Length: 408
Image (tube, rainbow, N blue to C red):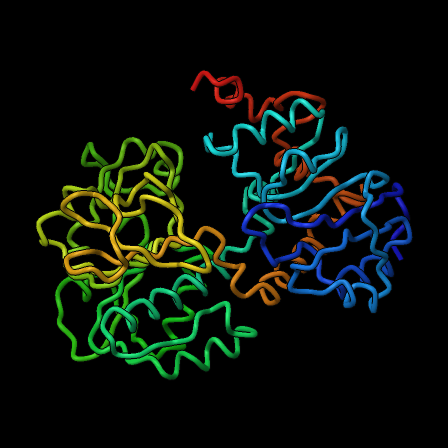
């Protein structure tokens, strides 16, 4: 038993974003382990009919449920919280999608500031090496790649896999992949982090051979293949200097697109990379027009709307994951209309395998974040991820001032 540093009451809130997300930050078994490990920690769960773990599962684990969480110090959810559900003066942890000036969440940021809430965004919880400690990224990659393969089957009429959300867990999803017949399709994956790792794991499970980027450009194959690209493959310095990853991360505006040679060899593109708005775009409307690029399916797992890929004109949903993009007009079409590109751009992909994703995410919270909340450790992690505190933006996120005040 750790020595108690401070008493803390933690509330697991009901998801209020529409459509609701089935994931949880802490599954019942992990809640039980936490309260057994830390005598200074209380956990209360707000009832919900929509979670992947039922209220009864929390009760069976001995975790109390109650509607009113106003007595809790810290509120923990997954997706954005509806503004009328926010309790003033509390600390909240969730994915806020505000730090990149997402216009659709300006009202949320305004409400958080107005209510004097400390907003800790999961996306910015990092260790002392600036590596993220909690994320659903792997599961986004898993489900996104599966959805991309499923889209190929539907578009080509070669096979019909059940939707990912109809699979009970990862094992059932992998069993479904045994029915896939990808033919000789060529798949390109961009990115090297958790998301790409999840995607390539699914491609491996589907029996699709990985080849090096150079071979992908130069060779033909009689079986399906995929390659994975890092930033030094799909971008280059615009001054002709050698690629430097640290420099790229700091000054992405000094790089230009080098993706088109790979696009010209690709049928199914799985975008798993992190994109900085200062970085070069990858596929413009002009690139996609005219039928020059053979890509017919784009699984935009990163889902940057109006970002690096012109065809991602909106997010899709778990219920309706696919839409079409007309490369000549730039308008949306049916997902398999003649001449269209099939787009998969679900923005909450891990929600399709919520139990697996929640268990993985919760395990990281248990080991990395809860000790910081309790004051047992203090690496500055919470401060680095705090977008607001005491009714204002923190210094690290003061660049959001114009956005918050509606001037950008």
